[in-house]
Image (cartoon, rainbow, N blue to C red; front, side, top):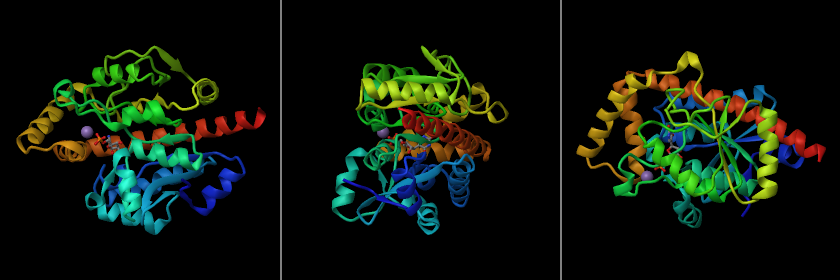
Length: 306
Ligand code: PSU
Ligand code: MN
């Protein structure tokens, strides 16, 4: 099934040029208006500044889209939490019913793969929630990484999750996790989590070579590239832990579950840190777009040499 491509995405893909996928749930559910719209524009501009065409992915009127217009971006930003959040299991329903929806990491990977886009930058991925051993609340993002050939560049995962369990799950599913210039899985707001990584690469060229090898070996699987938040924007993990446990208590006392849990925790943390976490979130997403664009360029160069 072919997504609808924006003109510039269609042109770049047919010319074999670098394209970078971006998600729409981070816009609709990840942060409030109007900061979400500013960020969506900044992310696209950052990709373009590197010479890469951005492809923000979403579902509109029952069609997958890769590459949104300014008015479509605005629509997702303004309608925020009223826009359905679509993960893998929601996609066929939304497409067959002609609905609109914001795509998560899992469903953005699906749209990107159908469009032929291999590199995707976001903020943080979903993962195994704290208590997942009992609740079984493990984001569909993790399964998707094991079954869809897209490389996801993220600043690790938020410490609202159980990062140890998240890494165990990725190991079980056979998903390579590569630290970019780090030996540790980053914890979104913080550069360190205490969880070591076995594989580290230090340049976009090495990452591109790794991806070509990965897909020659395992054409159907994804890759997680973990890119720590820039030093200047990092928040100490001790400082954020208290806020996270308050947000988790509030979620529990309000009975928040399922797909509402992640957006609920994100907005509570942002309120409790009076916006500091939002600045960090934007800085790391931009940093991931810069790296993603460089990897997309190196990946396209290597492909044209083969
Ligand atoms: N983590 C963030 N910001 C986000 C998300 C996660 O720091 O915006 C979003 C992403 O779209 C991710 C989704 O794919 O939440 C995961 O939701 P769930 O846990 O319901 O699978
Ligand atoms: Mn969940």
